[in-house]
Length: 182
Image (cartoon, rainbow, N blue to C red; front, side, top):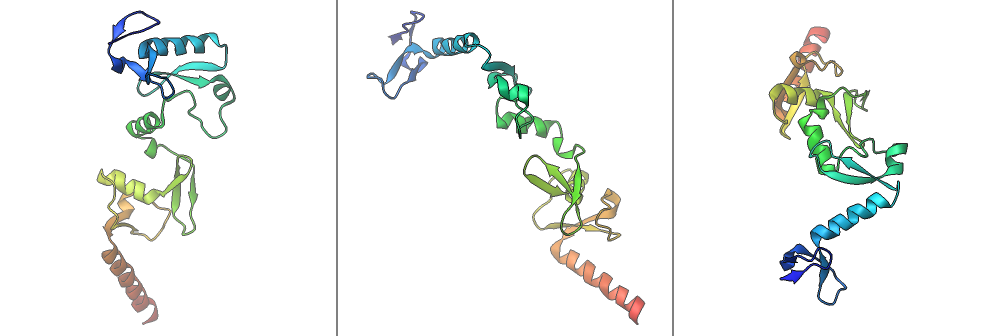
């Protein structure tokens, strides 16, 4: 048991934060008083930090005011979420993966959808996963029935394994050759 120098209440050692360079190894102010002291210092220090409330968990957190005012160069959610895990959880719960995004064509001619800052996925796999209601397995391939790589309607997609997909293409090539060159 130890007495807090700030509030004067006697508390367990676990309620005092550990300080590396203190002789006793423990702080002389309890964690709650330290938190209140920090919050007061932030409030009185002027406009350098702004208190925000997380859109996902409702927790209070502080963000540099200039990041919110300017809108950070890459981060569009500054001041909305207290952590990356809250941002990802919020996006997962609100189906942000399937929200309309600007799409592009990749080097093979498939429609790609941007998911966040760095990741892109081919749209036909996202459509197939949504139709199945689960993520595709690594060995599952999505085949376009009409051979149009940009036609990603669920009725135009077949989900099959790699072996069957290879057989489908060879059979279609064989039938095309018989029909046109025989």
